[in-house]
Structure formats: structure tokens, C-alpha cells
Image (tube, rainbow, N blue to C red; front, side):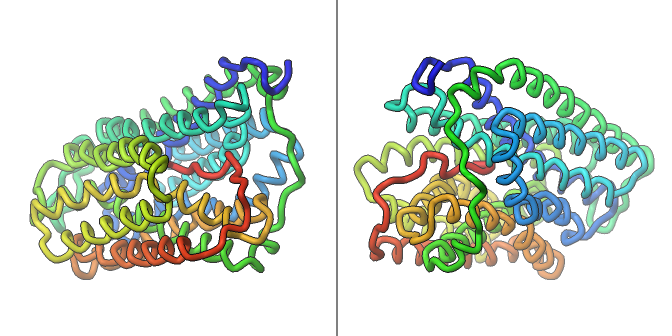
Length: 422
């Protein structure tokens, strides 16, 4: 079998991976709301859940690229899934011991596995099938990644946020806390089982996947990308974008639950978080169609300007209107990550491998900026924290304008370019 031969089953397996890491990543959002009440945390302390998850991108990206280059795709994927299952077990043990630090460790291990998945699965999505349809395959796989981010908050709210409503300053009862910790057990035991099944399926498909997989090069040095101006600018843009997106998503349930916003039960607010990611999924398919007729940098500038305006509405108006505006930011986020990625690859003077490595590392923005947003929420309230993503989106709008004026260095864009939670 060669790379152009039909590989429908292999592609279905890889697409399941895209769905899987989108689903698991989006569970962090309701988990932040859950652990805040379970462990009586401040907003900053609760945001350590997001920090523990996204810091893995900074620490694991380069080791992941070297691991996949050494083991090849399937073995790398199996190692990634094993890490994710181990992370679920760590969270199970930590929740039974009521240790928040253990939950954070489990999240870091899961995210390290997801980082390896991204390194291995992105090029596979474009390679498993006829070359003429590689763009369709990658977009289709990204769509399933977005579907995972829509379903994750729904499942997470159902399993993690039941019975966790507390008034400001109120401490959760022992019975409710025990029930909530049991719910975390149930959720992550289910996830671990699904990950194991997915690993078995991938291993069974290993010959078909490896036969159609693209060749692997040695891991590229991020140092090479640091000398390229546009690689650095793109990395900063990814840092700001992921940080802004996660800052909003991880606080969304708590924000909508707040008395001065929608004042709805926390579990119901958790269900609404899925609308934030649904907007991103819908916008991705609409945006891909619009890019046929409009330059990518202009669409990105418009989307980021709209996102900034919506965040300012939350900050200045707040209340019920602010809740709707916050959810609408998801629609604007839809095209941001892949567009930033490809605009950067076009303009960077470093190799695509080195540039991609730096961009993947910059996803660590999802660990850093939510902590700052949580600190603002603690000091001034949730709606004030939206000033941080507003500033990020305005900076991204400037990035898009600058990209439109910059020379394109490379006419070829690597199909493996843009997937995270997105």
C-alpha cells in the first residue's frame, strides 16, 4: 500500500484522535468551575487547572517531536494515549485523596500526551488518502476536533457540576463535596476507558497508518525560528490568542453563574459553555468557505476586531447582555489559530518545521494569561477580567494588518499547520 492508496479506516482512526483531544481539552473548562467550589479556591487558584494543562505545551513540545521522530507515528500515538490514560488514573487517585495538587499533576500528564498527539496526528490527517483531497481531510479532522470541544463541556457540566451551587463566601458541605469528588472519579474513569479503546484501535490499524504516513524528519530546533522575525511575531500571536481563548472559556461557567450576569445554576451555566465552542465550530466551516474569496489576513483582522468589541461590551455593559457577548466571542475565535499559523508559515524565513515547533510551544499562553484573568476576577469581578482578552484581540488585529503588508516568503503551506483544541 502506498500513500496515495485508499486509507479510509486509517483516516477514521486519526480523525477520532482529533475529536478525542478536543473533547478532553474542553473538559478543563467545567473542571475549573468544579474544583473552585470543591476545594474552596480563589479564581487564581482554580485557574491553576488551566495552567497545569497548558504549561505542557511549553515543556513537552520539543521532546514530543523527538519522540515521534524516533518511534514513528503509531508508536508515538500509543505512547501519547498511554500518558493520557495515566493522567486520568492520577486524577482518580487525587480526587479520592482530596488532593488538588494531584489533580494538577494528572492534568499536566494528560496535556503532555495531547501534545504528542498533535505532533504525530497533524501530518497524518493530510497524508492518509489521495493527495488531491488532503485539504479536505485536514479541515474535516479539524471539524471533529471542534465537535469534541462542543460536547466536552456538555458532558463535563453533567458529570462535574451537579450540586455545586454555592453563594459567595459559602463553603461546600461535606456531603456535596464527597459527591462532587465521586463525579470526577466517574468522568475520568470513563475517559480513561475510552482512551484505552482508542489506543487498541490505533494499534490494530498500525500497518495501514504507517504505510500511508508521510516521512519524518529529525526534530527541528526552535532556536532557528527565534532568529526569524515573523516566526517570533507569529509565536507571540499564538500566545496571545490561546491565552485569550482559554481565559474566557475557563471562567465562562462561573461568569454566567454570577448573580450580576445570568444568575443561573452552575451546572446550567456549564452547559452554556458548549455554545462558546459551538460558535468556533460553525465559524470554522464558514470561514474556510470565505477564504476562497477574501484574503486570510483581512478575515483575521475583522474577526479579532469583533472579538475585542464583544469583550469590551462585557467589560463596559456586563449583565445579561454581557453574557451573550461573551458567548459570541467563540464565533470570532473560529479561524484565528489556523490563520495565524499559516500566515506565519508564509512569512517566516525559518524552516516550516522550526517555525511550527515555536508556534506549538507558544500555546503555553493558555497557561499564563488565565492566571492573570483569574487575578483580575478576584480583585474586581468577572466582567472586568474581559479587558485582558480584549487587549489580546486588539494586538492580534494589528498582527493581521501587519501580515497583510508583509512579503510572503514561501508559496507552500504545510498541511500539518493548525490544530490545537480548535
